[in-house]
Length: 164
Image 1: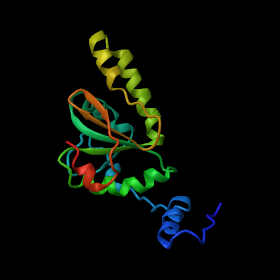
Image 2 (image 1 turned 90 degrees about the vertical axis):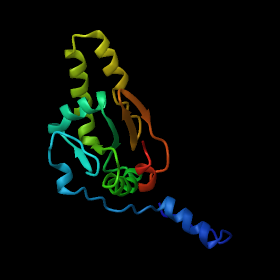
Image 3 (image 1 turned 180 degrees about the horizontal axis):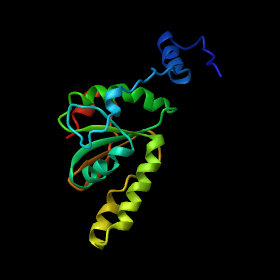
Image 4 (image 1 turned 90 degrees about the horizontal axis):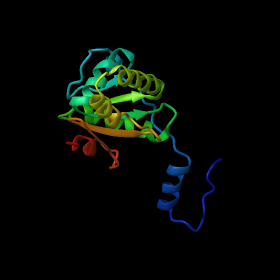
């Protein structure tokens, strides 16, 4: 439904309203090199995770320091965030990686299977505490040495690069 502009609103207010009601997000193209499986995550390289990397991601979540953006192709907010996130990933001191909706369920299933296979109850509890909980898109989680926090700040390259 197109926005009906109000003559009583200022030109700036109309522009802001049009931006939020008739958004035309940029077409996000994830570079081919971001999809290549390397088995590890390094700072300065944007990585879009798929099934071959699930084991490495699971291990990195348990012990490493990284940021994971869970996103969906159809989500307007994700489409606006991803270019900023990719730009920040190239300059960040910690790995910033992404997991697209089509791979999230597969990864969580993989994660749950790894928990079930773990014979040590203490490790199972640790894995449970770090399990990704995705209730909305985008969800950005910061994993740091066995702890997880949800990022709720501004979704700009400069703010993503400031994550420690």
